[in-house]
Length: 302
Image (cartoon, rainbow, N blue to C red; front, side, top):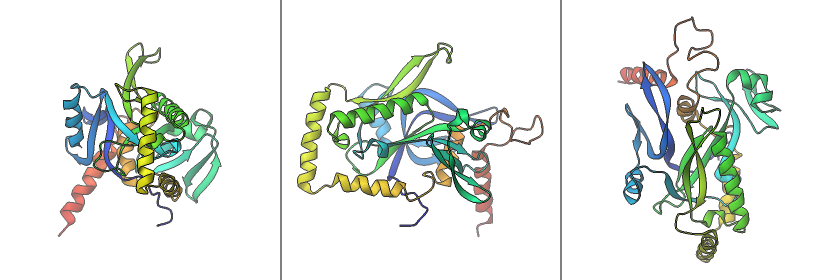
């Protein structure tokens, strides 16, 4: 195993509740009121839909607001990793990642471990746009039991709700979280900060048509079958824990670029302008920079 490289669950697709659209020459995130399942391939129009997106819509309504899932791990903290995260808007690389107590920060002298007072209490984080950032890996379908779809979010509501549900379901099932038949649900609510308009967040529940008692019984049966076949869930959780701990930051530069575009579209306090840029000159988006770099490399290729 390469030291310094975080080994994360294999990802075969993405779950989003929005998309990136181009407006007035800028690529900006746009929220939605439904889930979208995509592959890991992008074209000029955006992320290419995963075949399961169409299949789930045909099985339900045209708007995808619930997705049947299972967890990969029994440990709730392995399924959902949430930290306060600050990205470099120019490169897409993570600069500082903390849990509210300590953080890992990349500086000119390398990686340092420092106190983390959370974004509201950190001058460095507040000035640079530090946000809560969560990643949830789930299994959808039966084609690949170790391949996952990833849902990324900077929503306090989604992170708080998902964390609570995962810990509660793990507790009431006797630690059989990976065997429970669950579903992701999209919920809406209004707040004074949203000016009474609906905002959407992601919740986790028992699949429609079932009960918690029935789901726990199904989980016990699946756990017994897995044990009989030799499936070692404890060893899987341990392997994942070591993999996550093998690197300083979970997201690679390649993944971080897409995260910055979707969740951190503008530098704080600049109105979209790069810090230090001349007034009235808007910095090109990271996606545009990457596109130009790819085109330049293609032109240089023999």
